[in-house]
Length: 541
Image (cartoon, rainbow, N blue to C red):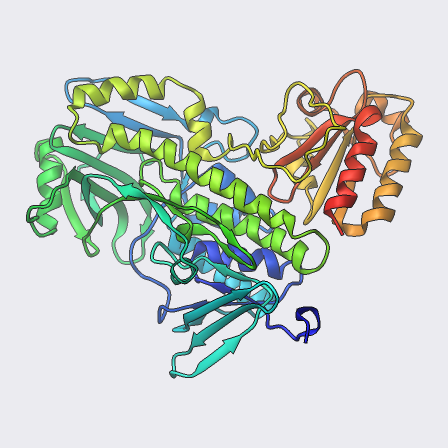
């Protein structure tokens, strides 16, 4: 029996953490059935990541999850570096981020984000994580497809044959191991200890994350959303030189000693959760796709905690996987779209790892003197692009399934970059932004500059609808001074900034945007329209 005529099981997502939940969210909201399995008996209660950056928050905005997080999260405007014998503060200022409604870091526990996602999946789609379900075997065959063997909580064995399987099952990924995908990288020579606790006498404002450096190591302090039992609470991390020798046990006293060393006895530890310790590695899988199996999140990459990017990259992986896999699974796009995922997300992981390594060299490379690290910090924090890299907003997808010789790149916004989120009007009564126009699939933004193109723009919208249905939606944005020439359904904008950034004062401009808010292509309508539509027909089935 051919694979095409074989009854297949739903897509399986292995891993009920952030990457897996985001993948399931993207699939289910587009009508693609999936199941999420996790070997753990229940959601983890261990302290995890706490920083949500702008690029991830933008992806969580379209169904209100970002707004839910803001209710209990803490917006942080800067990451501040403090060095001995230097009263000045070296600051990475996130308020300078452009083109986003989130010019900050949002301190929000990863467990909170996951809880909200689990609730959404259960209430909206009836999908619940199957806890205590282990993947024990995985086979891939070009003709027969993927076969997954699962063991449930009762020890029962189930053999599933999904069209696709996604591995978001952490740094010790069984999916990655069964496929024998190398996980290349190295460990950092430092040792970290962590606790969430109340602090007395700590006077730094909650809108900054503080890194206190010394030759003894790092002391990291960030205000967390209030704990129901402890109340006001902080994440405290100390990092010290690593080594193969014996290490002292991690106790509350360990953290008090570090606080005393930094603050001279003025700051004391109050009620706390359990202390933990960990090491840090940088590793990236050599492949994010093997046939019908895809990797994402910590199963595909892990980084230094410097900059707090790991959780964000996992969430972005899942978001990309969700919409791309949904289009392929529904027969709306060619499977080559998933090669784009594998290439671009691996590049994103490498870029995040490089940025984290630079930051790690400042705050946790303890074999260097604090004077040398201070010099590096001065150079790095003086570069405005560093906050863009940490936030994820400067990430460019260089691998493009829409590459075509018929499109001439325009000056300004680059293909592959994240579309800046700019308000369309200056009226307080209209709070519409560019990202509000981006649809569940592809969105073709047409910025009108030609007062004589009314008919042509209307014809373009009709052609796109006829050829692609709901896979591509056209949105025309017309400046207010040309409102008399706007085609039916056009959005009238009086904010010159949006036209200056996206458009061209001389002629109409087309911008093709993906659901992940990345700008695929930007071209003049008169010279690039036909090449763009031809490429769309080749990619979308």
